Amino acid sequence: MNSIFRLTFTGILVGLVVSSCAHRISQPKTTAAIPGPHCIVYKTRADYSKLVPVILSADKSKIVSYPDVKDINNNGNFPYPSPLKKGYLLDNRGIGPDVAFIRLTYEEFARLKATPPAADLYGMIADKDPLTVMYDCGNKSLFRDPVDSLNKMITSGSLARQHRLK
Image 1 (cartoon, rainbow, N blue to C red):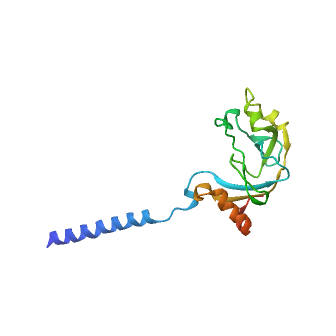
Image 2: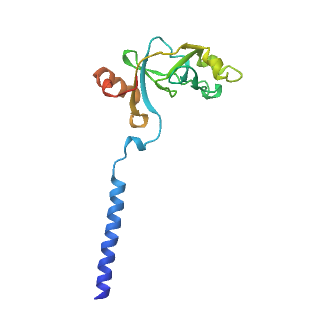
């Protein structure tokens, strides 16, 4: 009788453990758990698509982030934004609402012998407030074809329902 009790208890315990593990595995992942770049869609006041972006402090008084000359040239491929419908652009560099663009193109910047200090780059800013609108459309890995999907959002009007950054 004692061995039947142990066998039943062990069977129930194993069943609970397996059941709880299976439940955890089958839960859907949230977008917060997926690492990687987001689809940042934006428009600018002028065509800055060939210019190097830098990130300014919130008060726009200094540059807080900028690329190294080695960061922007991948065997002649530069991280230009992808053009989308209605004048929107898809970021391929990693910009945010406090972006500014310096007066150097990616090609000109890549040819520099060394990355200029932030103070020098600040003097090269073409526009401290270039954005007219910016949306975060979620993790890029969730889109099979980001350009096509985003263009559909733009033409359908659903882009405006995305998280607006500016």
